Figure 1 (cartoon, one colour):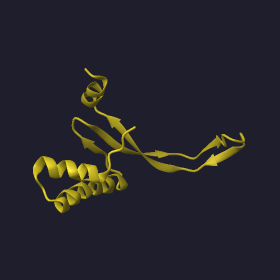
Figure 2: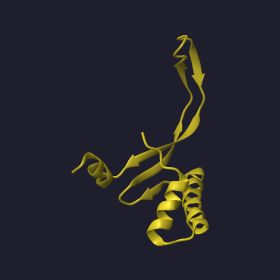
Figure 3: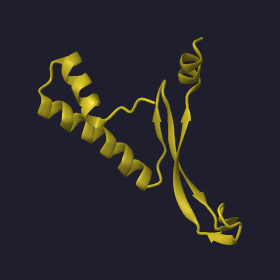
Length: 95
């Protein structure tokens, strides 16, 4: 499995657009900070042609420890989710 790091994204911007390293790193950080702050404030983030990031609120529930099988309370929490766009799904599927 390949992992794309912020540095690799910044290098791609630098190579494609001729930006300085510092500017490309700042640009990547700004993009991720904007996405992060929007999600923290409960706003959906839609990137056309790519997908939508959303925050879901999950209520508390009873689960089980997978090792012991002992019931355990899973606390309420907010989780980030990603739903790919139809266009992106088609590209991944090779259509």
